[in-house]
Image 1 (cartoon, one colour):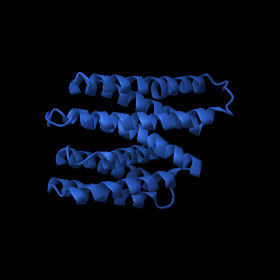
Image 2: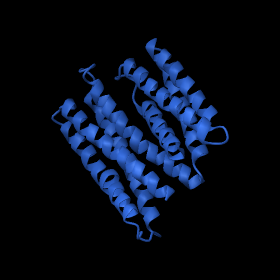
Image 3: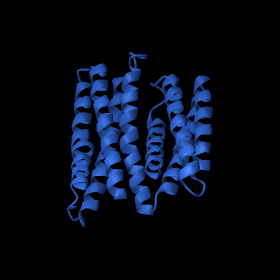
Length: 234
């Protein structure tokens, strides 16, 4: 249950931060409203899990983040962009605190924040690409910028992974070896290839094909980060 709680906090933090980093002028308010509801769902689920699986106050922080996400969605429904952006930032801050509370050590908290950016930015890019079906006139450079941020997050995560491997001894357990191979192949090798492919597809430009590639990138990111959590717990 703690692994699930950790993943939900990381994922929600990454999505909320991605909303903060998304320019509000060229993107319709409906995108922020819908995605804040996604953040609300993640925070609510995490709060329920934290209430039963964790000690301390992470559940209260998560519940507050869920309320702020709902209030932000209402603000975006009324096209109150400044207030909506403020609620996005508040949600990101609260979910970052939740990641730190759930983590066992400061180093684990920092790694969790980076991991959440990898997953959250990649999924956010996919959702943004899907939104071009609703707003075909939206500028392509908005999606390109989000993919670039996902690549930056991947670069930071790769640096963390390499640093972790420096004192590492290969495990004798075949299951751990398989998890390690999956973590590297999906999350650290396959993910950047897919992100670059999606970015190159935008040069055509073809947002639908790029979004299809980003769907696969989301699977690679989630699979890679989940296996990383399993390895860290082991």
